[in-house]
Each structure stands twice: as structure tokens, then as C-alpha cells.
Length: 357
Image 1 (cartoon, rainbow, N blue to C red):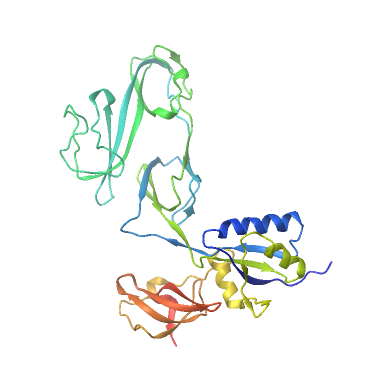
Image 2 (cartoon, rainbow, N blue to C red):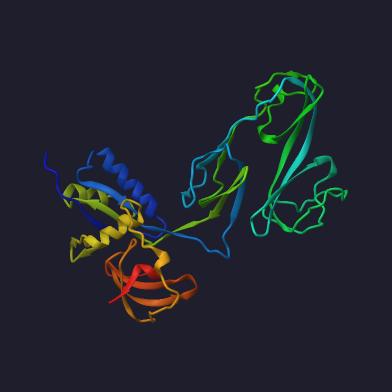
């Protein structure tokens, strides 16, 4: 069998239909067993975080929790990010009390310390005590005014829990706080004799609430897992990139897909993109390693001017030459206009990733 060399081509479609086109091409390729002619299909995207608008969520976990992510990882909504083992009884005993409580975790404004409060639900928790809400020292957690916040901070968690008290054979008590949704009532009902090692909760499987960037910090006996909401923005709306050997069969696979307008071409012939442009596409899609510059080496002084021509020496757009359109000294970044398959495209680069021409 002869394997033809594949090149990267650009097809035009309608903005918003890129993902549907990608799936249709891949399905048709696989159905017809034409992987030798049609390879990868890519929609270049960039991750966008707007610090002033970024939605964040924090979870407090034990040091024994199993993490499926590390700091800097990008996750999609629904991805499993951490697991906590089920709660097991430490001793034999009898279930003496089961009551509904609220577990409220407050984090100081500098994010260095946390404090946990356990408050009976019967005392009617203030409705404004929710995750992410700022709270001041002296503010009450419940309407009866008995439970007071002891520091300025942010509510990290406000979770309904079951307070379970086990009276041991020696008369002493073990106290457990189990998340309401995980509590196994059948194994720890009031008055029931229970054995050491009995699991009274389900394991916790923590999943990402939204597409996010992960940040993890250790706080002694606990871990704080932070999710920062991210959005993925199409770099080239209305365009899909296809790796293929340009034969009649391959052309028909792509061109026969509904809503494919045409190939980017020179005259009537589809025009493959340049090798360095193809590298950018692969890097942005995570299919090729991106060389990372040492950003600590950047100086505070900005030696560039708007309109100046610079060369990008590392990152996804390495080896491209472009014109500086914006300067952001506080972030040590430049916005550079580069030409990719005939289009002026703005890219943001760190000072350490460019050099003067």
C-alpha cells in the first residue's frame, strides 16, 4: 500500500458550525476507512481568562484525598478532579444522636487561613451565607445571633451535613460531620449498634462545575482546590484545518460534508498552508510541544514601541515576525499582529518570547 504524504489544508464554513464540521469529517473518514488520506482535523482555540470577571470556586479537601489534577491543568465541565474516601467509624458503639448541621468554612482575605464553623440548621442559617460571599468579623451566621464570625474573610463553603454522635463502650463520644448527600442513613440510624470500620458515607467524587484552570495549595492538614472559570475562543472563526493527502477521494470526503463552503485555494486548486503555519495549528491544538521561555528573565523596562517589527522566538507562534500593536507593561506582554495564511492575527506574547528584528 502506498502512503501519500499529508499536508494541512484550510476549509471555510460558517462561524459556529466548526465543531459540527469537524465531527462530520472524522465520522466520514472513519466510515470509509480513509485514514491514510485524511488525518487530523483541528479547530485552533485559545484559553481566555478575564481576571476582573473570572468566576472561581474553591473546595477544601483532606490531605488524604486523591487528586486527579495538578496546578495549571485545564479541565472540562464534568471531569473528575478529586476523590475523598468514605467516612469509617473509629470505634464500636451506639448511634446516640443524628442532627442536621451546616458546615461553614471561612477563608481570610489574604487566603492564608481557614476556620470551620458547625451550626445547627434549627437555628436558621442566614440566607446570605453562601460560597464566595464576603463576611466581616462580628457578623452572625444564624438568626438567633449565637454563632458569630471571628474574622474578615470569604465564605469558602456552606454545606449541609449530618452531625453523628457515636457513644463508645467506655462512655466517651466520637463525633462525625458527614455531607448530607453522602450520608448512609441505613448504616447509622439512631439507637443502632455499629462496629469499628463501618462506612457511614459514600465516597466523594468531585467533578468540575465548569471549564476551569486548576490551582492547588496546601494548608497544613487540608488542601484547597481552586477552579478558575475559563473560556475557549476560536482563533479563526469559520475555518477548520484538515491534514490530508489531496486526492479526489480525500477531496470528496471533505467537500461533500454539509456546510463546507470551500477550501482556501489559489485559483481552483486547494492551497496547503506553510510548514511554520502548520506548526502553530498543532501547538494551539496541543498536538505539538510548545517551547516555553523563562519568563523570569524579562526586565521591567519596555524596549519596544507600537508599530515596531519583532520576531517571536518561543511559544506557539515561534519563528513568526509581526508588528507590535499594543503594549501591556504591567503584565510584561505585547500584542503582536502576525500574518497566518494571509490573515492578520493578533497574538499576545510575553516580553521574554520576542526579540527585536
